[in-house]
Image (cartoon, rainbow, N blue to C red):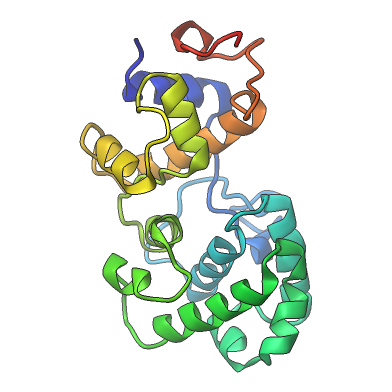
Length: 229
C-alpha cells in the first residue's frame, strides 16, 4: 500500500519540478522554458499579466486538451486579448471565434466575460465568489486560487481521481469535492506542494495512467491494483 507522500516522491524522482502553471506570453523569457512552463517557483503576488493568463487558460482548459488551449491562447495573443481588460472590452463574437480551437467556444467566451468582470470588481477573489460566477466550477476555481493566488488547494481533477483510485488512495468514481477533501485531510497546507503535485500527476497520467493504462515501466506499478489490467 502506498501513501500520498510516497507517491509524490516517486513522481518527483521521475519528473522533477513540473513548472505549472504555464504562462503563454512568457515563452522562452527569463524564468520560463520554450513552452511557458516555469523554471523555478514563482514569487507571489504574481504580476497581473500572469494572473490574467492563468484565469483565461483555466477556463479554456475545461473539457479539452492543453494542446487545444495553446492554439486558442496563440490566437488571443495575436489579437492582443490576453488580459482581463481586453476580454471585457472585446466583442463577444470575436472572442468566440478566437477561442474556437478550445471547444465549447460559445459557452467559454461567455464564461471568460463573466469571470473577468467578477475579477475586476474584487481585490482578491475567494472560492465562494468564484463559484458564484456562471460556468466556474470547483476545479476551475481551485486552479485559479492555487496558481494565481497561492492558496493551498488540491486539484482533484479527472487525472488525479483516476490515478488515486487505481492506487487505492481514493474510492472509484468519487466526486471532485469529496476527493479533494480526502486529500486535504492527509497532506500539508502548502501551496508549493500542491502546485507541484498537480503538475506531477498530470505528467504521470499523460505518460502512464491513461484511461487505458500503460503499465510497462510505470514507476508506481508495484503499488497499483490495476497494474496489467
